[in-house]
Length: 149
Image 1 (cartoon, rainbow, N blue to C red):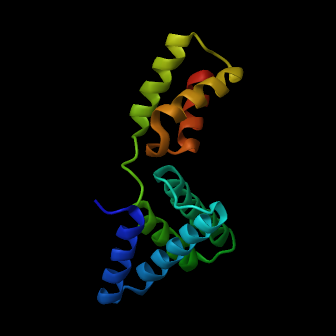
Image 2: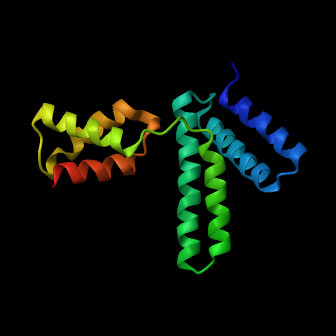
């Protein structure tokens, strides 16, 4: 089985052959971010670090899209959103909100937690359970809703 970086490199080749300029540029930026992280660490990235780089790149694009919308530049915001969608293909399947809500509710009930002070233990347990398959912001929002009805 190929590594995630090898998969991205193969996708870069495919994008070149298909003349998909936007996809090609996005994947090259991702490879650069991965390479920079490897240089900073002084070692190859493990799966967790790779996913962190991809998530960070997606977050940067979503933030840029929000800023472009605030500035009235809808065409640039749409471009950033398309780039984020391209990058999301390299993340594992995301857990649904219903699944996250059930897990949070079960954990809160089992531990007898309530109130805002319980956010720490709930977030720690849910991030350990879902890892890269769920967005921390979604888990946080659902945990707040469950703990503060």
